[in-house]
Length: 284
Image (cartoon, rainbow, N blue to C red; front, top):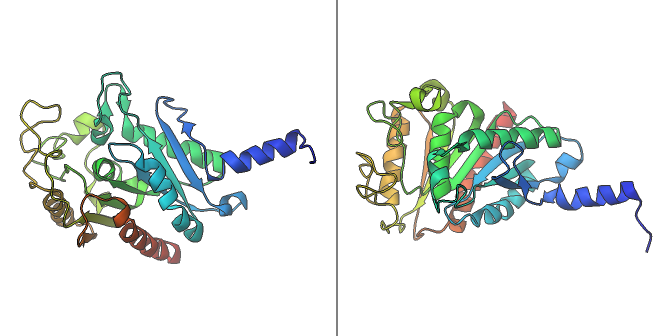
């Protein structure tokens, strides 16, 4: 077998670890947090591609499922897939859900995600100043709140089956509403920017278990109004859709028949939505 020289070995390693289904990278901005990607062949060919960020749920393993589940979509739509990994217990206190609410100790997860996107854009020579975001379950929490905080960064958003929702409600504080957004996050609610983002929401009509999503007084994320959006995930997502539409947002709502809390069974709906948005974006 021919021995590879240094440059040949470097190129081979790059093709294995940096393209296609990549290795796991630590964030340079915060090495406690990680990411993995699908990078389509178009990038190695020097072409520009779009970006989809897909955010895992509480178990974190869906980061791999989303990377692989969207790979074919990325291949045929010239779209890279970036899946952050926000570990459980990142501060050593056993917390599972900090990333869902954007803040945990000294971590601002929204800022870290933006830094991840910027870091990978520089690595691959891409312009990802705007990207799409999708999340399911715990990731649906994240995509809901990131869309409210940073609509100017997005060309599309898909929010899947979040356990709790943040409404664009100026009469309630975060995380139920947006009244104190500027004081808390340093930027006001940008209604006009949000109204420009095509938004997709998806949940199964059989996703009815409420044991994990009912906030109880005294629990970590309890606040007045925590359960007001509804008792089940479909009810809460419908409330969010109505609130977004009331804020001028174009919302596509998919209530998927016969599906419970199953992330894989809704991905086809997400891909259909994103494909349509991409076609309009590129035509424009």
